[in-house]
Length: 88
Image (tube, rainbow, N blue to C red; front, top):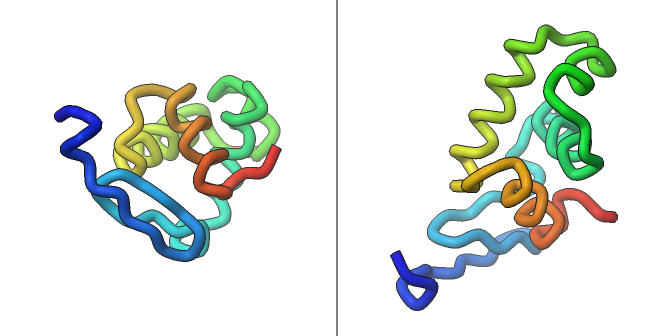
C-alpha cells in the first residue's frame, strides 16, 4: 500500500490511516502501556512498574501494534504522539 492509497479518518482529535482509534476507546492499561513505550521503557521495565507479568505486557504491546497497525514500538510511539493519545 502506498501513502496515496491510505484513507485518513478523523474522530475525537485522533487521526489514523484506515481506521478510527480514539483515546477514550483504549482501556487505561493500554494508555499507560503506550505512555511507557513513548518514554522508552522496555516490556520488563513496564511489567515491573505496573506489577504485571512480562507476558501480560507483551500481550498488551502486541495488541496495541495490531490496533494501530504499527510496524514496531517506535512507530506505535510516533502514532500515539501524533494522535494526541500521549503528550510529550
